Amino acid sequence: MVKWRELRLQCETLTKQSKRLCRAPGRICKNGRIRCRIHGGVSTGPKTAIGKQKSAYNIIKYNEQRANYNRSNNE
Ligand SMILES: [Zn+2]
Image 1 (cartoon, helix red, strand yellow):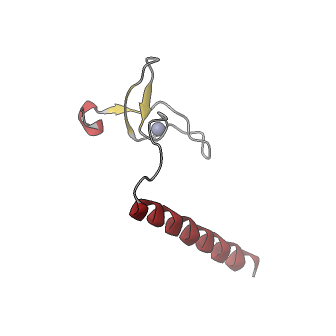
Image 2 (tube, helix red, strand yellow):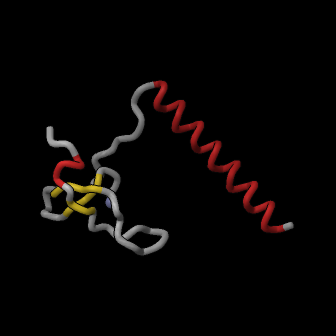
């Protein structure tokens, strides 16, 4: 298998939030476009129990951060 970084192609996708180019290293997909591992639709999410735990913990952490940020802005 070829490593992602060895090809040094940039992902062509525009990001949802800022409408700028995704800067992640990508590879050529079946349709001839360059996509990174996130935008290529290759990722199927966490598989091991530890990975699932980690991703759940990250969601909780992110929601807390957002709540704190909103509180500090309102006061
Ligand atoms: Zn991308």
